[in-house]
Structures are given as structure tokens and as C-alpha cells.
Image 1 (cartoon, rainbow, N blue to C red):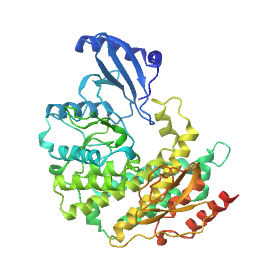
Image 2: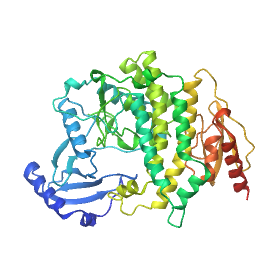
Image 3: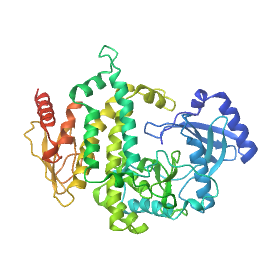
Length: 459
């Protein structure tokens, strides 16, 4: 992990530093001799510090964002419980301070790898973590544990949360006057289409064919299972071969708690950082989990619907992260956050995820139908063969492109049969995310947007 120089601690709160040094020495005999602030490589919520003792021991301190989500309590309590259960797939909690809102954990060996570099065996190991936690029942907990953030025990709860996120963005966008203070990225987004309406169309399609009773059916408490919260490749360390505690170490349990029994694996499969996971590896992950917990066919179908709703929820999350108050929260751990770049990134991800969600909804509605791509005459877009479909890609640099294939995306140099990742740098690129959507989704607005994008690229 990239890290700042030891002097980086000067920007941390003085009270935190004094309390940390005192607590480390008094509770752990750990005389603080060195430290450095760690950058995990992604925009994050909390501040991380690598600690070194005079005797050579090392540990990690995590200074948490205070926002009412009980981040420290969730992570520390859950890790303590799992440790008492004998699970070694997680860091060990060592000390904490409620006053200064930090905790100290064991420093774990391992390497964080992007999903494109994972192996099938590692994907299956990630599934086994979910299977391992599936064996733990609510009555097994020796301390009270919260529900996960945000847990969803019915489709209706999931729908409500998506609409709550949409409401935050709609309120923000509706309050913009259209003057010079409007961020250009948000202005262009709203001028091109109605993003909230796009997500509402997906929600309407998601609920088509299921009854109100099915939407409202709630997972009974005795069937709840632990979910680590933000389970994704960027929160997993690949341990050295032959490590005594297993192949993986799972980090960042600040959203952990009880959840739908399929939620943890579904969250991994649909996370932004998992979109680069090769499809055979994704299939292996889902198969290992579903076989490992003995999901019946009906339960597997319900899991597919849960994953589809998570794809739609990601669309709303990307819109929500354009709201200034939520951007400001990111400055706690990333004070130099480039806000314009952040907005462009979230908008690009929104467009990409809309295409993924549309394909996922299509699979729910017509599960037996082979997906066809709509071949549009778009100058500047190269058509490449990828798995069983044709994918359109838009060049973003020498030898690279963006594109979407059957609702799953990847990255890399363009070559026949190779997956590429859709992370468009500009609004025009999101035409690529529409090219793989079944024809019924490509309404006049979308086709016009694609054509406009292509004309812009020609110029």
C-alpha cells in the first residue's frame, strides 16, 4: 500500500495521538516508535495508520468517521465475536477508544489484488468465507450485534432504500438554479437525460411479475446471517501461499451485521471492484456459495433477483455521491479529494451500471432468452467479439477502450475475445453501455444519445 512519510501523523488530532500512545503502552505494552498514514488506493471513509513498536511489533490504527453509522462499534464487536468463534479469516481487534473513535487491529500479511488478477481458487475461497459465516445463527452471538448497514430483509426494503438515495439526489438537483454555481458535470448529466427517471424505470421493471406479497415477504430473524458489509476484492488480502490462517484475510467490517442470508455473496458479486472478475471466476464464486450453503433452486432464483436489485441500487449510490454533503464526508479521510474528478467518475460509473442493471433485469424477465446485442452504426466504436456476444467499445487511449458485455465489465487492451472495462471519462462514452442492452431498452432517447455521442466523436 502506498504510504505517507512518518511525519504525516502531524495532521492527526493531537488528542487522538496522545490517547493512542498511552493506550498502546498501557494495554498492549506497545511503545509507539513509528507510524505512517496509509492510503488504501481507493476513496475511503476512515483514516488508517500503520504503527511500529520499539520492539519491532506492528499494528494498524483506524480513526473512524463519525456519522451515526456506528462504524467502529460494528467492526470491533464483530471481529471480536468472530475471533472468539475461532475464525482466522479476519484481523484481530486489540484496543479501542470510544472517546476518540479509533480502534487498533492486528497488521495482516497479504496482497490486495484487482479482481482481474484473481484466480478461480481465490474466487472460491471468497465464497467459502460466506459459507463459513452462514453457519453462524443470531442465537450464537455472545454479544448483541447490529443489523448490517444497510441490511435489506425484503425486496420492499431494498426498493425503499434505492428510492431514498434517489430522493437525496433529486432534492439536490431540484434545488440547483442553473446558474454558474451548478457543477458542469451535474449540469451535463441532467441535460442529457433524467437520471432519476432512468433508475425508476429499472425499479418498475424489477417489480414486474412479482406480487406485493412477494415484495413484502421478509426474511425471518432465525434465518439472518452475518454480512461483513462491504465485501469486495479491494477489502480482501490474498495471503502468502501456505499461510496458517488460510488464503484470504477480509478487512473493513465497519458495515457488518445481520443481513439476508444471500446478501454477503451477492454484494461481492455486484461490487464495483468485482466487475473486472472474469466471468468463469464469478460463476465459480456463485456456484461455490450456493452449493456450500445448499441453496434450493427457488432460493437461487431469489438470489438472482437480490443481485439485480443491488445493481439498480448501485446506480442510485453513484447519483447520491454527487450530493455535496456526501462528497464532504469523503474529505475526512481524503482532504485533497479532486471533486470534479470524483463527480466525473461517479457519473461514468452511473452510466455503466445502468447498462448492467438493464441487462440484469432482462435476464429476470426473459431468463430463457439468449441476449442479443443491437448493432448500431456508430463511427469511432470498434465491434469486438467477447464471450457469446458482440460488444461495442470506445477508444480512450492507445490500445484501450471502454465497453459493456452482457452486464459484466472488465478492463484492458482491446483484443478479440477479451473483456474490457467500462469506465468512461466523458458523458459521450456511455453510449457504449447501451450497445449491449436488448433492443426493447434502446428507446428513442437512448438511440438519439448514442448517435449524438458518435457524431461528437467524429468531430
